[in-house]
Image 1 (cartoon, rainbow, N blue to C red):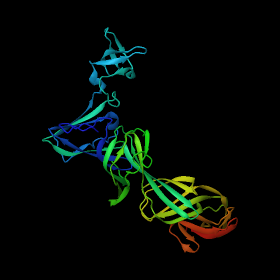
Image 2: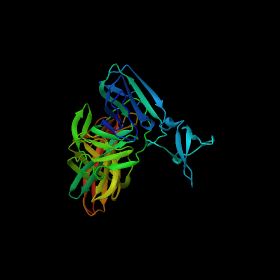
Image 3: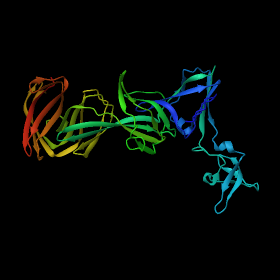
Image 4: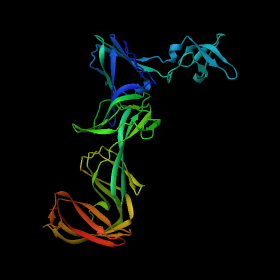
Length: 427
């Protein structure tokens, strides 16, 4: 933005602001260098941008002040009240009129008559700013002495988020990510230094409505930007947060999303399988399995949406939560009608107490899988069993809840069966 290095520092709508940005998933810290040659420093922001600032976060770092006064300033158009503007009439030239009130565009013509007009029918002797009818907020600091410092504030209008693509094929899989940096304000930023933070950070203040970006500026495709687009580098961990930095300055346009290549983590493991997660029941059941994926990445993954492609085609989308390096990511993309299961639960025996109440029951659970695929498929079942004491396949499990797990390879176009024994002891 236009900067006057005198007694006042003005952030003017429509020009780019040189700033450092520390961007979090739900807010950003904006840090701008300022200098005052006198004892006052005035910061002016358009109302739309001010609405995104978290109350109580605007501050001066490195520059002491004795007081600060915030107020709503008049619009640019209001500064022309009582002055001549020009009214364009259809089929006629423009006539000089006097702007009486900017609020409702009341003008007075040469004959002394008053009327309200449309803004687009007016013309001016000077170049109007962007959104000349929008008000601005000003914050004036009173300083003990001149000096330089950093203006900082938190805004919910600038955020970032990763989005992942998992490309799978018969030869394996590759995970890559893009970073979307969003600016929901009418203020463009010439960003000198940018840090991205991944993790859970809470800040005070009620969330403010943020305008939806109107423009998507894809960094990889923008003319004149592809060769100089910044790269995102890891800065490591900071008290449970993970930090990334952009390698070079860049421009974050107003009401826009800038998308940059993010990370391409190496996968240390990757599996596809037909899965079923269910709860124990003494009743028989049947149905279709679901399409499951499981992988581990060689670096930490910030949370974000994940698109899965098989042989270049989209097969589903899900969300990845914040994941530590080497932690397992497992998810389902819906039913797999080519793999069906049938489940039988047979009561093997039971024991009663002296009052005739059943206190222990033993079941034999058998799963039969049938696949119509032209290739072998792994079938996995996780069945949660509840009870005071649980024994699964003669191995004691923890009290109150346990899990029985089955894994079996089903041949192409064939069947496979596997089972387990459950003892539920409620004595």
